[in-house]
Each structure stands twice: as structure tokens, then as C-alpha cells.
Image (cartoon, rainbow, N blue to C red; front, side):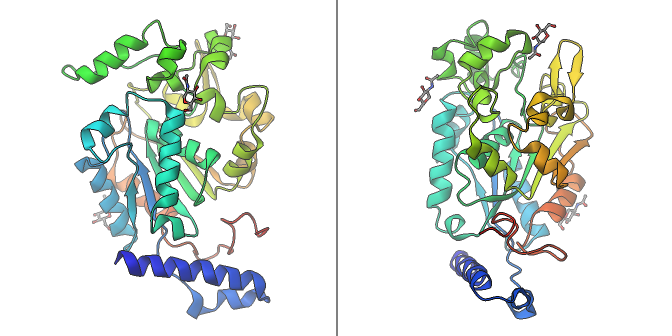
Length: 328
Ligand SMILES: *[C@@H]1O[C@H](CO)[C@@H](O)[C@H](O)[C@H]1NC(C)=O
Ligand SMILES: *[C@@H]1O[C@H](CO)[C@@H](O)[C@H](O)[C@H]1NC(C)=O
Ligand SMILES: *[C@@H]1O[C@H](CO)[C@@H](O)[C@H](O)[C@H]1NC(C)=O
């Protein structure tokens, strides 16, 4: 199955090329050239989870049942599930993103796909955004994130009673979050962001200040890559008590009691990341789902997969969009 899927992607890529070389465009729309193969789906799990976890795979199976033939790839920092879980707490995110980029680019099927879809749970959501901004090879069509910390966290979570790995990590964080020792080693510190310690954050953040283009020097490639997304779907859990503040899922800034929606923020007005442009094209979708952090509803997942994942070409959509509005 893997091989035939791979061949079909090669054919898709080939017919896109033909489409560009051989006008008129109508040829592209011929029924025979329709390819119903769903794009592969890349899933990145959250803190304390691992790539082999049953719950994660049941989400992958759901995606496959909605769009049969979907290849699902679970991002991992190690093939050993327990080391992969440990890497959700420990490590340098520059290296983590680079490893995900290298693994996806080297994957026999993902690397031949014209595009992929991406689904990030909790911190996995901002890490997949890091993939889009820093590599995007293959490019992401739809990036969907659930309860992600796109504008960071301003407090660290409590660990479940017997999770000593979590407790060890959180103990190191408290009071030391800005030190380069911690920024180099503890994952949540790298998306820690305190509006009342903004200068220290800008100086020290090893991940978030960079991928959010908050420093004076803006990385134009990050913006270009975000603008290539066909959909950026940001789900916030309505009653999220784990993520502080929960509004981070929508890039909102919460400073004390003041909540600034994305559209009122400087990062949007000056469009540091391309979010304003996505929004104006109707490609930025901010949604809520009931429940506490990661209380996923099968109904919402089904609807999201139906709407945003599946074959490259959907009725009413132009071809070549993923490849940059036709300027291939
Ligand atoms: C994280 O790793 C990158 C590349 O390996 C390195 O340049 C950076 O200094 C590291 N970050 C910290 C805070 O040590
Ligand atoms: C947050 O509020 C404090 C106090 O009003 C202010 O000094 C700080 O600059 C604000 N931070 C940001 C990022 O706006
Ligand atoms: C979600 O989709 C699957 C597969 O099509 C179906 O079996 C299941 O009943 C759906 N669940 C809901 C809640 O709609």
C-alpha cells in the first residue's frame, strides 16, 4: 500500500508540472486527471505524551476513516516511546524542530507528496508551526492546532501526582526559566512568555520569541512560509485550566487582567508572521471547542478532518494554491 500511495504522489507531482507547462488550464480539470489520494497527515503530540500512545493513534485512525488511504506519520524524537515522552520535557527545541524537519524530508512517502496536512496537539501545535516556518519541505496545506501555546505560557502547570519526570522538569523551571542552562534543556521554558518580563523574554527565549518574529530583526522566510498555508485552524478549549492563559491558543496577549485579541496586536497590524494576510484571505480560522485541555470530541475531530484534510484538489478550489497562488 505504501508503495502505490507513493507512486500516486509522484504522478500528482508530475501532472502539476504538466499543468504548468501545458496551457490551457482546462486540461488540469479533466476528470481523468483527478487524484483522490488524500494528502498525508503529520501529527505531533503534546507534553507528557508519546508518539506510540494509543489515544494518539485512535485520532490517526479517525483521520484515516474519514479520508481512506491517508498516510499518518507521528512525529517523534526517538523510536523508543519512553525516550520520546522524555523529550517532551527535555531538550533544545532548535534541535527538536530540526530533527522533525529532517525526518519528514527523508521519509519515503512524505517527501514525494506535493503537500502534507498537519495536526498539533497542545505544544505539538506550536512545534509544527516551527516546522512550517523553518523548513516546510514538503509544504503544509492545512495546519490544525488544538489548545496550543502560540503566544506562550505565563505559568507552569501542575504535574499529575506520580509523574516524577514532569515534577523534576517543573522544579528546575521555577525561578530559573530565563537562564541559558534551562532554555537549552527544558522544553516548556522555551515557550514561556511573561508580558511583565518582556525584555528578559526577548533576550532569553530559545524558541517562541524567534518563531513569533518578536525581535527587531524579522525573519521574512517565516512570514513567507506561513502565508503559503491554505488553512491555519486554531482551536481553543473553552474551559482550559491547564494552559495559562488559554487564550494563547488564539495568539491573544493576556497581561494581568488585560486581554488583547490577535487583531488588535502589533504583531498582527505590522504582520510579523503573515497572520493578517492569512486572515484577509479567509484562511485563518479561530474556533473553540467545549471542555478542559485536550478533551477532544470525536464529532469536532470528524468535522475538522472532513473540512481541512483529504485530497489536494477539492471541489471549488483552484489548483496550485498550495504551491503559492500560482506563482510556481
Ligand atoms: C540550542 O541549540 C542550538 C543549535 O544546536 C544552539 O545554537 C543554541 O545556542 C541552543 N540554545 C541554548 C539556549 O543553548
Ligand atoms: C504588560 O503590562 C505591564 C504593566 O502594565 C507593562 O509594563 C508591560 O509593558 C506590558 N507588557 C506588554 C508586552 O505589553
Ligand atoms: C466519526 O467518523 C467515524 C468514521 O467515519 C464514524 O464511525 C463515527 O461515528 C464518527 N463520530 C461522530 C461522533 O460523528
